[in-house]
Image (cartoon, rainbow, N blue to C red; front, side):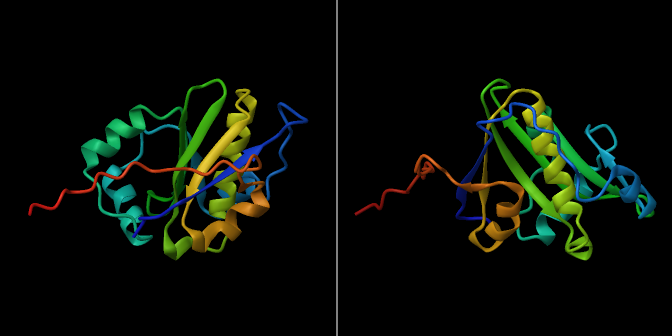
Length: 173
């Protein structure tokens, strides 16, 4: 279950719009039977929710997913051509100028290990950088930090520690 996260940041102090060479090209993805998508128009939220559950996220109300996606600035997902289902997904929210947070990075377990997560993240980060956003953060389970490090994410270089609001129930005595 996604209960504790670590904040990692990606900052690019030298180049505001670095060029990105993808580990797998769009053409190669397509030849392997995958389509990259950047809108929610063809995204089946029930199928996306199934991917969330498959990776250990709690099942979510699809109306709330829809609302969250409508308030998302950048979205990228991979559709499996044969099944027409999402198999990889990530999104980012933020102020559109300085800061963005990447959320819900998932790859269907049946499709993990073939570069889809990396493909999604490379393109999402590049899109944010092209918008001039240079402070990009994400929350991550400790067990997958190794996935994000080669993509340029580090513990906050300024030593900033994230905090999470926690509503604790008061015990009645």
